[in-house]
Image (cartoon, rainbow, N blue to C red; front, side, top):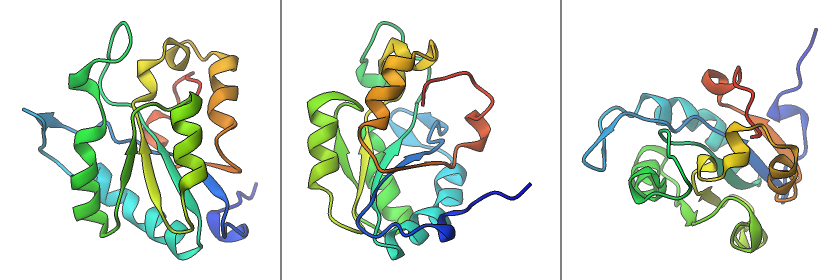
Length: 155
């Protein structure tokens, strides 16, 4: 069995939904181990070089009952920028008008981190409607979250 890789596609000016595992160890709002972030850098670099417009999907922690400030991914943007050497914008939702606007405003080589997918109950319920909302955002989906791939989650 052969698998296609990002090098097999013309990603120039394509919106790439990149499912990443950014569920990093943190204490008091600070990342304590950047291993997962660092391991994503080769993928980010390849997508930037290919001219992709990159939307990152991830989860952080186990929030209950919707958005909770302590589980927001926003605190990661400066860390991602430092570790990857690329600017990283943030959108405060992963679906709907906010996410659509973030996706459409991306230029080739730009990166936007979307808010925690677990803020929506549909993520952990593997809801097809939620998956369709996510899929509407991009042209190509890349799963680089191997550590979460076994979960029956929508993203």
